[in-house]
Image (cartoon, rainbow, N blue to C red):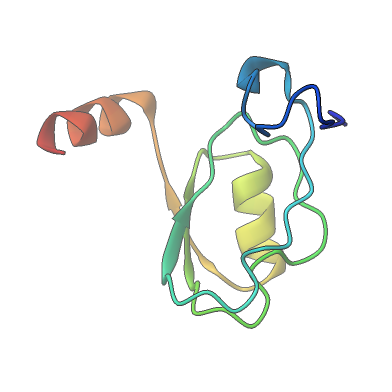
Length: 90
């Protein structure tokens, strides 16, 4: 896990080097859906506990799909082509 210190005050100063992040900040959020990138290799616990999240967008066969299946969320499969098309709309 990447260790953040005073020398590197921003948690995203070198995001490419981050291999593992523990985030508990999503419990209780009002968002109804989340997009989990394919670079996320594991989701432990239930980071969206007590939240409105009911839909998980992610790549098939990844931690996103495992999370959705484990916690009874609707899983919507993504593809690189779908995301590229979506980016042209935004």
